[in-house]
Length: 372
Image (cartoon, rainbow, N blue to C red):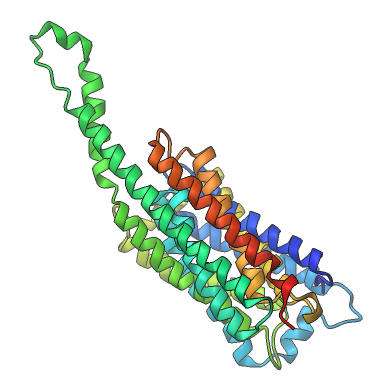
């Protein structure tokens, strides 16, 4: 099976993870008004499909060595279960993350949720397999925490500013008999009122809280997977990716039903609406799952590289979670989630990016400065 044998190769895989994990959510945004509860069924299928293809291809290279099927035959049952359990934990965390995206947008949900997951995952993964300079590793993680706080503040300020602007626009009320009413047509006044009502529905704290809960769970799935692919009778990266995907796919029918009936945002969903979705919406969901899983498989392979490569699970997971910065860029530059922000909000966003970049840079060089 394919595994990196140099630090450069492992680093490239973690950078691929960062791009995939930071970009897959665009597929959900591209579905338009398609509810995330329905989107997620296709997403889960995409995750499973990608894992099967990877195990039958990359996981079966070089028949002279152990293949993925050999790994299954030799693995302990509890190691197999860890892979499945990691998928279940990830699934509930990711569903909450997608819900937070639908409320607060990419530029908010990802930095807060995934940033918190990075910190938890780094600490837990390092305790399982300590590789890399701990000072650089944890120092970089601390800067990520600062970035989380800055992003949450930027979002709250931005929502408050939008509410004030919408309220001021709606307050322009001119009597119909007044000739000056021609300056403010009724359609404009109605549109302003509509924007005010829509803005009132947005709750900055709700989006932040859901992102934080998602982050707590998201930071736990990777260490669980690591317990399944480390130690005696462990699973190799590609087989454990398959068990992980099975956990995601099977639990979707439980969690998906729950969120459809008791949604975290909006009204309950009629599951029959899934069959009313367009071909484009279904294909986007499958593509989103496959993109995310490509990143996960790349990360599992990088963290399983020989110890001489010095890229353990803590480092590979931390670099992969640079996806936060990628997703925030998508949200700000493409989806215009912070359009017409004030200078204060823009300064907070710039500071957030700076903290993320410096923090991830420290984590990236941690394997190169291992204490002797």
